[in-house]
Amino acid sequence: MTDISEKMREEYEAWVLSEYPNQRMSKFADGEYHSTTIQYCWLAWQAARLPAGVVSATAWRVVDAKGKRFTVYNKDLAMSISDAGLHVTPMCDVPPEGWECSRVSGHEGPCAAFEVAP
Image 1 (cartoon, one colour):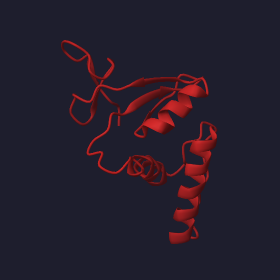
Image 2 (cartoon, one colour):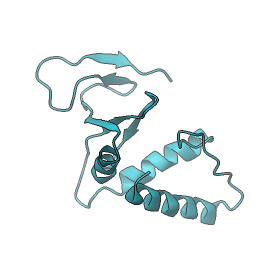
Image 3 (tube, one colour):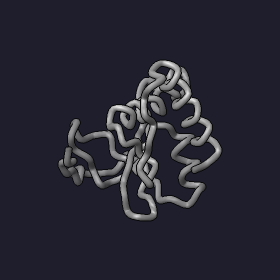
């Protein structure tokens, strides 16, 4: 994990524990939280740190060394992850909720959309 993402995660965890002192913050080996609520809140925490005035942002697809995919909504964090050597690509933002496009943001022609497993 990069210094930027480590600092952001430390801030997030400190906030969670200040609001919910008994909350378990355990994580899987890949860094995702055991609690899906805490994991989704972590994604929202990252998205909330977008610069002022940004109405919507592109998401970035990250693929770790084991092939596990996850989404990052903060450009600086995505670039830091890329600098750390993981595969990062901007995601197409056209498909509706519950679907993703395997093509990069801004692509020409139709989406290559697939349904995301819940």
